[in-house]
Image 1 (cartoon, rainbow, N blue to C red):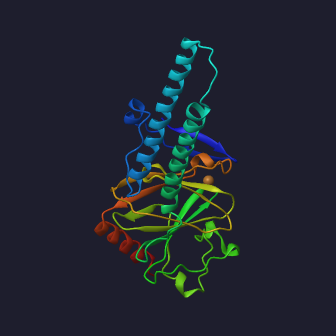
Image 2: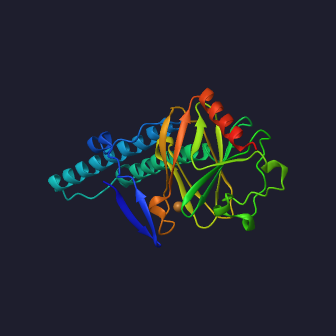
Length: 263
Ligand SMILES: [Cu+2]
């Protein structure tokens, strides 16, 4: 069965949605981790949920005890029954917040190592483009006035810049395992949301900004790249594929791309 969708006059054929049986049976479970920083985030998320569940239960038990006791006595020791629990709660939530912010910042503010693989990601209505800098490890200059998807230059790469000669533009993201990746996110038109649930990555791509995010893929496989911002009428079909390969296979893939690009 095929699904037809009408979008600004274009007829697009979509593959039927695949059903993930594991997610149906255990909808509260997170998808498997495929990045080095993922387990720490998952652990913190579950810790938050367990703490909130415990506090919710405790609050209801106290409420129930209060209703059953029905004692009309003057509250004499406000410090012990009100201020101290309040202070403890404030310390608990501040600690959780600081820990969460550190985990968030670790993939953004610390900067990637110098040996990280450089990949540029560009969001455009309604596709993702990926660019590898080639052997010179430097991206060629792009110019908005040169953007011409119909002519095979969706990013507007300036051919007169010597650095752009070996740049590789692809529509799928291919990464090696166990090597740090430094992604630089751009957007051409509106804000797009770059998201890969299995890598525990979610970051907006904002026009006029280059946002870096770095991580290390760990598990080979094929994963969906989604756009998590409602970016226009074709938002539903703005997705791409991430393939994580063992290093040798990644090197072969990159070499094949280079060979294909060499005139
Ligand atoms: Cu989008």
